[in-house]
Length: 387
Ligand SMILES: [Zn+2]
Ligand SMILES: [Zn+2]
Image (tube, rainbow, N blue to C red; front, side, top):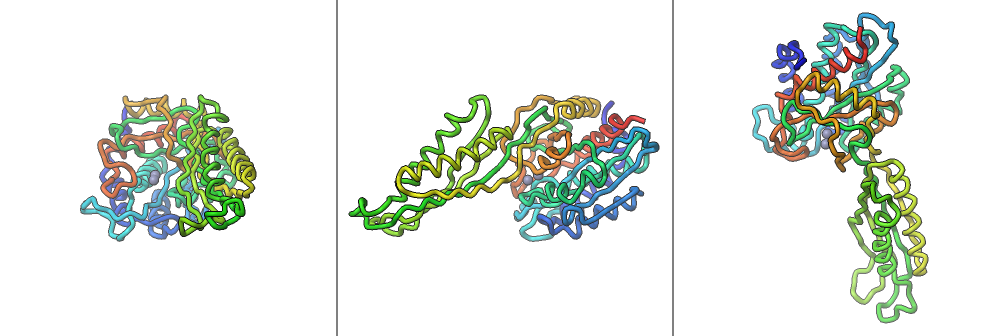
């Protein structure tokens, strides 16, 4: 079965929503127009329940099927936020807000889930409940976590969740996913090394912080090669190294290192934090200096449940002839990971054709992908909650 005919009919209307959202991008949690747009559409479709303000500015819509003997509840998620980028596409529906742009296609994700909501409200050809999740602040604000912490999963009894992201470079209509880790975790660390500043000509009177911190950098790079299982993919990068010395004849008193760690495995992630702390503290100590490590946890690994990923792949095959069910993981991160930590589910990529990359000022979501995304969402409901 290819795309659902109803979505071919609805395409002009859904495209209009997408372009309206595109022209009016809003950032992080500050989404009054976007969240209002979503909520008013969901009400107009006749959703059984529409609640705003979940996870600060997220929106939840509930659609009940013709029957509820299954007691099953499926969550479908889209992100609504744009980016602080100045658009250069020159489109006639380009951003009307200088310095803000839908450069990651979340306008398309929102429009596709609205399209699925319209269809599911009309047809209700399923046995159970669908929870439509529209989240704020995917771009670095952990809006997905905010919604989970606000009780999203428990309040509506969500049992499994599905979401998708457009993928420039994949053909339109192509779906790609995999069981297990799909996208990386992203954590940051800051290490402040404190020695004893002094005169460059009298190092024996000082504790050379620069030398100690340099050894910390070298030793940190032993962790991935010597402590991590070689079959696991982990990246550690020290991005900055600054000291408080302002002259060549001064031994620095403090040095600050800042870096990032990416992993595809929650255990490797925990190991990295423990080893970074230990290596930094003990290496500095060997030089008579002291290291203080601040670890800032970012988005977790996006881990697809194996059964849910297999099911999503089967559903995608029903919608499109182009499906890759074992795509290699990628190292960017995604805050749908928090929802997948709370409930089993799967995340997919949907081809955006030969477009600019996400986060580029010339990027644009490809409206031809809309019927595929909508059909996937509708089909996953009708199959998982088959009436
Ligand atoms: Zn993005
Ligand atoms: Zn995105």
